[in-house]
Length: 183
Figure: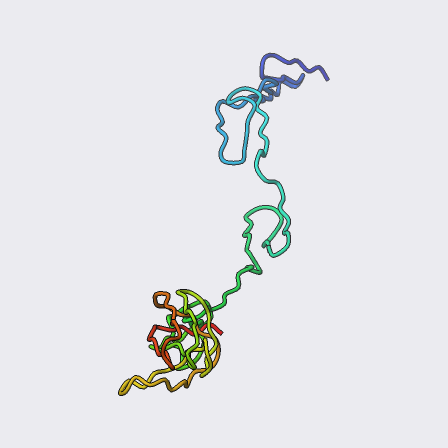
């Protein structure tokens, strides 16, 4: 059987004709543009498309990932945050609030006094700490009616008034100051 070919047609010896579409051996892309994470070597012609973004991800310490490729969610699975309340603060979960400390507790304030007796010389200095009691160089409370020293405190208190020195020429010194309990 004789077959002839002409252009896009093939003719068989029984006069049957078959027409075919031409095969384009130079088939190229007319236009392409790269998006996020994609690169191309050319926008027309023979184009090579390359993934230039992340192709995989893995979790490190304290991090979790929903997958290693594709649409991935990265989460901090163990936040390294700790909270603690200092003097005069309270803490509930992650919320701080100003707290009023109880009387005679660390962080509380009083109008108190220094105590020196027996003609002793002693200095109370701004910002210095003194123990509570009724001996020379200690601090306590003062009777608001007659100004006498009554003690009544415990712990260690910071002298929050100007520095003062008792010269020891009188039997007892009662000097008032704001005191803050520090321990």
